[in-house]
Image (cartoon, rainbow, N blue to C red):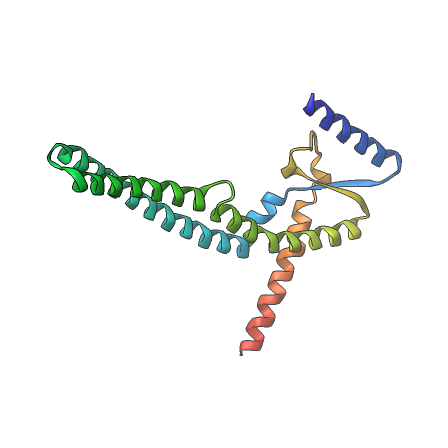
Length: 183
């Protein structure tokens, strides 16, 4: 039912656009992001950080399993405070693993926040390029293929490459001016 409502709304908007003589264009923001060198560099730095955190978590997990196995095998030999102390060590490590996993990899964890912060500046650039492209091409509406609301698209209405051209030309101009000012 929900998909029907979304599809129905999309068709109504599309028909309203056609009847009001608005031109409609479509872009793929994921493709645009993936072709931006600055985004790829930032994403590589983020992925390196994620790899580091995963490695740390694996080390914690290995230490936990090692201490837990040692505790289980020596449990019968331990008495009183020794038993409680070793059991607490194992439980603290388990708690640390769960806390670290939640803080870094959870739905509101550091990775989610870093990914959001990574994309935001590029979204602003993409929005500006889309606006420029829409004005140059007389588009009244621009849809994003990434949001999965595009049911059919003829290639001539896909403006992704034009937005990329605007973005990448802007990058080339910045790089050229930076290299000239360094000389």
